[in-house]
Image: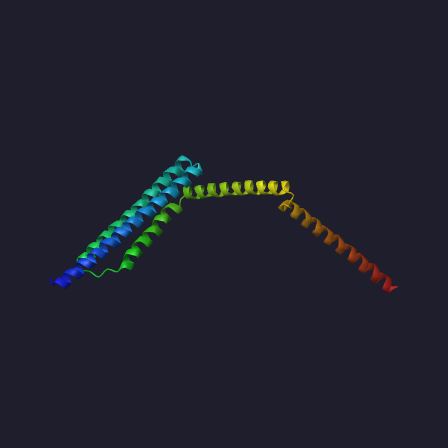
Length: 180
């Protein structure tokens, strides 16, 4: 092998190793974030035993998807080292496909739905508490609150309705007077 060919091969192998290292690092970061989010959701959901088992099984399946992706990456790096033309987009596609498949494994479970429901419920409770505190604070500061504005709007609508009823009566009276 010529010096230039050897240099090119070493350069390509170094690039592939760096790409593989970045991919593995990104994979581990993605798995860690995924696991952290999953754990928080499961903790908040108050799941029953069946849901906990289903959740653990779905995470195990998702983990298998990630490991299959790592195996595919290793095979493609080996292929590239043996001289096969392997594009960097192929590596990206492996990780994107596996991330999609792993998330499907977890997101399709009743445990995930329960954890999301619990999270939404908690967020709605927090929103209600925030609204109540805001109303109370604005009221104490002498500002109009949403409740005050809603009350005024309701009264205005009622006044407009009554005004329209009076106008309709006047129109009928005027028509009756004109007919005589």
